Amino acid sequence: MTYDLDSQAVAGLGRLCVDAAENRIISAPDPAGMERIEARFHGNAFDPHRHDTYAIGVTLHGVQTFRYRGAARHSLAGQVIVLHPDELHDGAAGTEDGLRYRMLYLEPSLMLDCLGGASLPFVRDAVVTDGALRATLLSALGPLDRPLDALFVDDFLEQLVQSLARHAGNPVRPMTRTAWRAAALARDYLAENMARPVRSGELEAITGLDRYALSRHFRAAFSTSPHRFLVMRRLQRARRMIAAGEPLAQIAIEAGFSDQSHFNRQFKKAFGMTPGRWSSLIQEHAPAAAA
Image (cartoon, rainbow, N blue to C red):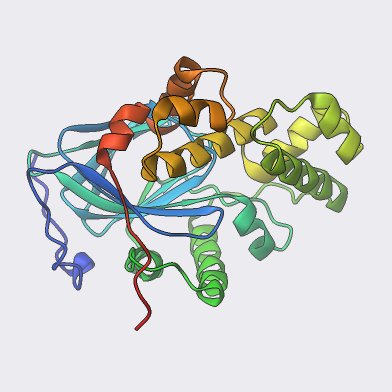
């Protein structure tokens, strides 16, 4: 099968040429709840995995091929990929020419304030051809060497939510204020206590709901369970520590895992590769100096 690259879709990014001999991931300095990367790969990139963030990005070079919701998908240069939280997927380069893309990993909680009580948008077509959405994404995914300005992030999120809503299927009934408050209290408590075991009784005490009702409301709000939310916060901390060059055995304990074996298993389930391979690929941008 032959694929034609969309050269206009990546105009202005041509100076960032693909190095055919190199696989790597470049991460950006970002505010909490957002992560931006550029990835370059040949062959298989990620084993099947799932995370509790949206993964929304633009293919810049080559063909991105992956399995998602039981079907094979292909994204050409200039197309947008939208993966919903907690959905199993993998990733690979679809041609020998290799693959380059930029991706935003966005925690659902950052989108909820923009939705005015509506549910999170679920985009059924994982590969979208939408010039306006692509432009919105590239406005944030372009300057990976600079942190995003807070006012820019507010406007970007509003535009992104509106674009995703256009592509979403039928919305789910909005959450009640009581349900949202309980889910938000649980989320904040888990984030503050991520380095230690958290028991269901603690969440019941701070939210006033039994564990089963809370689990339903939490998943409705954030598209994942309280347990997976806690594990993912630990893993995100671990990735920051890996980028800082800390030893993997030390990271496992400091990030809240029982041992390195447990850490390795959870990391691969969430990101599709081992911590060791991630460490060999990751390059972290230092914030650019002010002009």
